[in-house]
Image 1 (cartoon, helix red, strand yellow):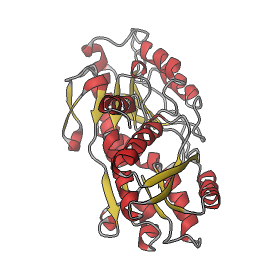
Image 2: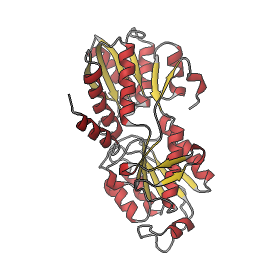
Image 3: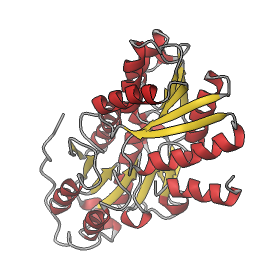
Image 4: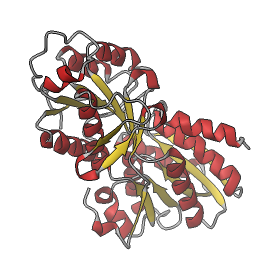
Length: 348
């Protein structure tokens, strides 16, 4: 079993953890090629923030980016969302480059890979564009701030404890993840394995598969898991696309009610599967709040109100005050459990 020191390192590592045309950016200032130093100069620029999700057409990012749009417009800035159709390690590079070339005030991005977009982000920062990662981080040197949706430890534990409770704390389970290189997914999975070893020794993880945040691929991977592992008692899918696809498969299969499913999903996606008994409980933070907070962090950086160092503080509109923690991480809060008793109270 890994030591406490190793676990702490994993938690820290997790922090390093529709198509719209890019709208015209504000007129570049005469020093736009600089690093953007000087709060007076930054404050004088028109605010223009570009959101780059892992992929377009993903309900999770539709919700998070809607929060970003609300925040940017409340700040009197210009909002735009661009990105690839498919989540792959280098698919975001061209959108980063375009935003930087057009002198965006800030880029807010959920990274498909911690390193693949690093060079593009470094060039963007050098041109004066601030970089905020959210949902899935890059290595810290490539961004100014990471807005983390919840503590990685808490996310992992909620899902592991949830599936263990549903299957009687004994039996075979599998994980249906997103892309194999996704920073956040891999950090959560590493912590889940620790939690299983430490707290649920009779629950055996027999397989981890990747649906690449594609509905049909995730659906097919669910079918394959059940065929490959006939004694499977539960599936954890820490991705909103994956859990919805898995629920869709289970809801019409003979395994409905026999194979438990939990993970990370949105209430609007999962409501019918909770009500028909396919899923008892799943988890998530509010992605709209996550995008909203990321936009305010980006604006504070662009205006020179903060630099991203530990101890910096800023106000995020209706969410209130936040402080930058170690490694430039801002934490939204704890995940929420959604079930039949509360799911109709949420609309996202």
